[in-house]
Length: 212
Image (cartoon, rainbow, N blue to C red; front, side):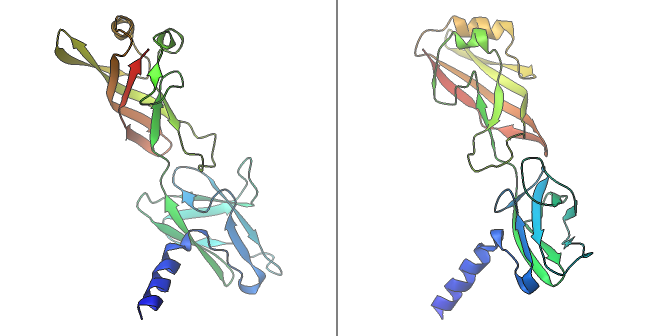
């Protein structure tokens, strides 16, 4: 009985990339094994003898004819409900169910240096800004962009810590001057980072690195 329950649970967990084959129909996502919020997801439907049949989709998403640059597929799916966990695409009597997930968490870099890296002070003369990037090799939509819209710099002087709120992604001159006064091995910290994404504003993890 336990074995049957385990098989059932595993089957439910593997709904993210199901290809329907009823009546010679195949429905698949052309970009990934999931559908993402905030982007146009390419979907391919291969069918024989179903001319004129239009696909349908369950609540929380919409499907229409079209192409997504760089991918195969003759249909586009957009997720419209921010809370939906999965959607079903139907074509004739065939149905595929796909898991839905949000866009990857933003990763913050300065001049290409990530959290925890040792950052040369000279970097701040070349790239005086915080960048939000997608650090997920499995995410297929390389043209999706994030932008830092706000951050707070933590300043330490004479044992006293203060903060400076900045709007936008540019590091202002007074903060740059403070950073350039630091010594090798000193840390820099940015917190309260907000990022603009295709699905709206999100909070990003803080950025801490050592200077060298």
